[in-house]
Image (cartoon, rainbow, N blue to C red; front, top):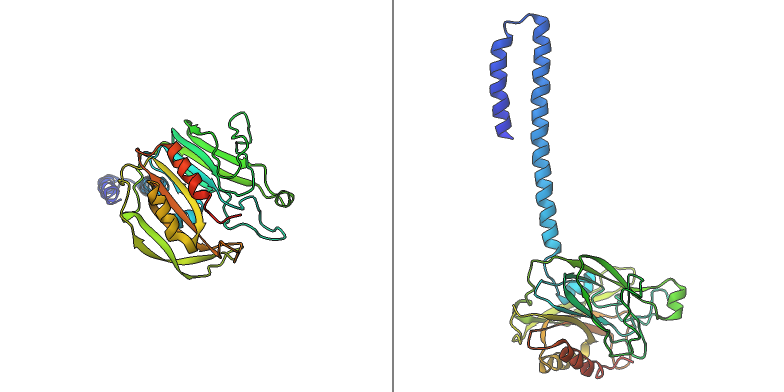
Length: 322
C-alpha cells in the first residue's frame, strides 16, 4: 500500500509542475482527472490486498479441514474422523441400538450417531468396511441410494460388509434402510457420509497413545440433554509405530469395564489412539451402566483387515449389549 502511495505522490508532483501554467478551466478538468486516477490506484491496491488475504485465509482453512484427526472426543463432539494418506482401511461401526431415532416413545440409543464415525473424510483409494455391533438387528448399507453402486447385503450382528474402495474424489452418502419402524414413521433415517479427497497429510497417533477415562460428569446444553464426561489421561506404551497406521476404527464399550476392553484390544495386536467416556442417552441400564466409551483403535501393516475383523468379532461378542 505504501508503494502505491509513493508512486502516486511522485506522479502528482510531476503533474502539478505542468498544470500550474494552465488557465483556471483546464486546471479544474486536469485536477479532477488526477483525483480519479489516484482514487482508482488506491482501490486497486486495497482490493489486491483484500483478495490475497482472503485467498490465504481460504487456503489455511482448507488445510485445517484436511488435517488428520481421529481423536475420540473430537469424533464424539463432531461426528467426524479425518484420515491421512497413509491409512488404507477404515472400519465404520454400527453401534448397538443405532436403529432408534429421536422422539420415540422410549429413547433406546446410547449415542446420537448412527455410525461411528458418522462422517469420514478419507483419501482416494481407501477401503471402507461397515461392521455391525447392533445386537439382534440386521442392517444393509446402500451408497447414494443406489443399490447398483454399492449394496452390503444383510449384516447380522458382529458381521462385516464387503469392502468398498473409494477411487473417486467426491461426497458419498449412505443409508441403512432396515431400521426400527417407529423411527421410520417419525422420519428418522440411519445415514452417514464419506468424503473422498486427495489427502497429502499423514495420520499419526495421538502423543504416547493417550487413553482418556471418565472421572466426573459435566452437563453441556443440547437438544438431547446429552451429558458428556470430563476426562483424565493415562499413558499407554504404543504397540504400533506412529507412522505405520494402515487401518483405523471406532468401537463403543461400557465405561465401567474400559480397562478390560483396552487390554483385550492390546492383546489382539491393536494400538489405542484415544478414548472418550460419555453419559449415554439411554441412562442407567443393567449390565452396561449409564456411561459408554468411544475407543479409537489403529493397526499397522502387520495386521491384515481379515485379522482385525476377526478380533473385533471376538471382542464384540463379549460386550453386554443386548
